[in-house]
Amino acid sequence: MRQVISWRDGVVRAVRGSWAGAVELEVDLDRPAGDRSSVRALAYTALVGEPEVGYRVTLTVSALVRGLGTGGYAMVVALPDRLPADPPPGPGHVVKARYTPLQPMLLGVDEQESPWHERMRDADDVGGLAVVVADLHSALPAVIAGVRAAGGDRKVAYVMTDGGALPLAFSRSVAQLREAGWLAATITAGQAFGGDHEAVNVHTALLAARHVVDADVVVVTQGPGNLGTGTRWGFSGVAAGEAVNAAAALGGRPVAALRVSQADPRDRHRGVSHHSTTAYGRVALGRADVVVPVADGELWTRVHEQAAGLCEPVGRHRLVEVPVTGLRAALEDSPVRLSTMGRGLEEDEAAFIASAAAGAHAATLTT
Image (cartoon, rainbow, N blue to C red; front, side):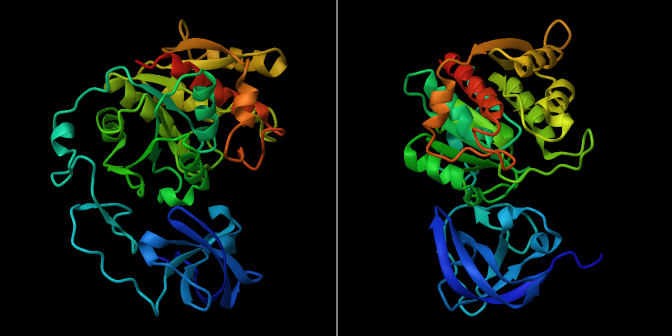
């Protein structure tokens, strides 16, 4: 197998900031990465410890060299001169990011050592729990804004799947939503890790949301940084259809948040994205409520027509129309800067309105 990682050593010049579980650094490199002699770097403190100015760090810079994502970060692999002490003995034998150099050992919410094991052992149903499924991580704050716009005091949990970032700490949005009290709990599923609870898969994550967290509404979407190849099937968001199936299999109420754009330069993502039509139209075998905002304009007419193709009598899902009244104000109240594919609320309002409408509908399904 060919070499697949670009490595660098460097020295921390500055600590730029931090949020729950992560520290952002400025690092001077021992040799350039592309045309860069210094880089922004991200350290996950639970994995590598707490870096300080002057510390030597070992980094991976592959994505930067190739001009790809990771939010423009080099990733800290180790503080080679200051390795953290071994963690104290404790429960948990669930390994995530398995067989990679930085695999963490964690306590699974349903494993034998968990205080929730007895509750989870025979759990088999989520009892009509409202489960909003979305393609992109950027939908998360918008969905919650929609839930809140419906009024009431509903407990919202987030299930992060492993199609994007694996560490939950990569998401500043989640940290800010928790700090603002908009998000009650996080559950990381599959290879994703770092949530309040660790789940083996989306099914056990949804069971934990109901039986451990006692959530009223759950939002399921991947972490930041989705993968796409410009092909019909080659994108990480196909997991949205699988999440619909999981929710339906467990007796939940799946709500499909459409990925919508009025500003994406790619025609396949204008109106309803082909990611949504593939995930909900081809992958999802369970029945979901497909939410369409009711608003004037050519875009929303197109969205309605595209969504209707997923719903009865043509497809298997149920078309639900939701008025947009109050949704813009709820989005403007978000404690998180709204951004999808680099576009904010002013540039691509439709993207956030569609997600907020799904949240508003989910709020009406709470029991």
